Image (cartoon, rainbow over all chains, first blue to last red; front, side, top):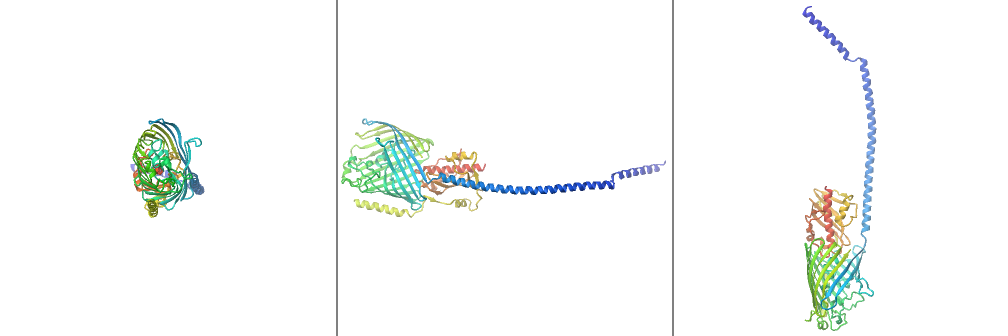
Length: 419
Length: 176
């Protein structure tokens, strides 16, 4: 065979072979039909599934909407419960009537350097209850009832109504009080809870000269004249002293217990508190007859008092000066025409709970003459506030007294609370 | 001499009486309403208020700061651009005092008494007093400084200090 014949034979054989293969790859009509039917079936299935999914989706959407609504209702309900609960708690906790109080237990171990008048005793010196009530936004009542020395009958105790007054707000910055209230004089007279001062016993200057605790019956106008500048004006019953007590001011307190009210007293006070931690105040009191007309040889009496209370950081300082000027030959004859006292008390807070103090006091209820009637006293001690409203006190006192009077030196321990 | 004395004091009494009605100063009453305080704080661009629910450890933490249980379920606040404002009530001696506090960057930007209802201690409303709290921060759940008190108003001062401390603590809590 020639090469040409060989090539053409090979070529035709190759074409025939591929034709046959091609003929095998192309599906027959029947196969196409089957395929088509399969695809159609699948399409139908997918469409059905799609429809199902659509329905489920709709259900889910509805459910989500419902859940959202439920959540909103729950939220509103919780809001309502919260508001109702808070308002109920609030009205339960803010009663219009308030009860408070304070008390002091004292232990004194004092030796009389001038004689045998020692004082070794333990005494629940004061048990006090405060009752207050708010009638409305502007009108309120406040009272202080005290039991002194625990037992009244047969004991040295006393039940005293130290405060019982109604107070009405005339304007936002002025108010009037009427009833029995504390005379606006001194440091301790108005603020005398045991947690507010150093020393187991109240200081002798305020006790004998002011004389703390001093309350009278009458009316008082109080208010603010400017920022940090306040005033008090009181028109009250007055003191009634007599020769038997050497016209000593402290013994002149009528305590509004069927007290003679022939001669009233006028008291005025100005207080400046514009700087935080500083209080400066001065009070003046005048009454026309300090014996309520019972003693012709006695006349009017004027009190001048001034004090400073300073707290800066851990340092504290209290200083007070008070002097009475009594008219008339009666007081002058026993030297009681001038009754004076002053004290100075520096203190230091070691930390939030413990403070130490020292105090020098001088007082004389017969300063008008040159007789030996002057007392001086050194106190040094510590206050431990185991809670801001509970205090334990320990102090040592060294007194210097006139020759014929008790001179008490020794230790005092006190426990006090307020609420 | 007695009559002159008497007349003098009576005159003093009456003239001070007249003086007293003329001046406007801080005592009892509302200084600013809650709404006015918030509006002023955020320069009238008020954010919507949010609440912090007092639950779990927050309740004892708050009780520790105030010294008593908080009588409420949640506390409302307003917050914007890093500044948080709180309005909190706290009892001084007998009556609640309403305070407005603004905290910025963990420090006190402002403390103001919005309403004062006690009969004493109104001096805590004075700027000279509230200035002591400026830029105050928290130091171990307490205030980082000592506040000079006002004699006769220890409880009102304590109320303000508690509220300031609480505002700082709550701001720290919500920003965690």
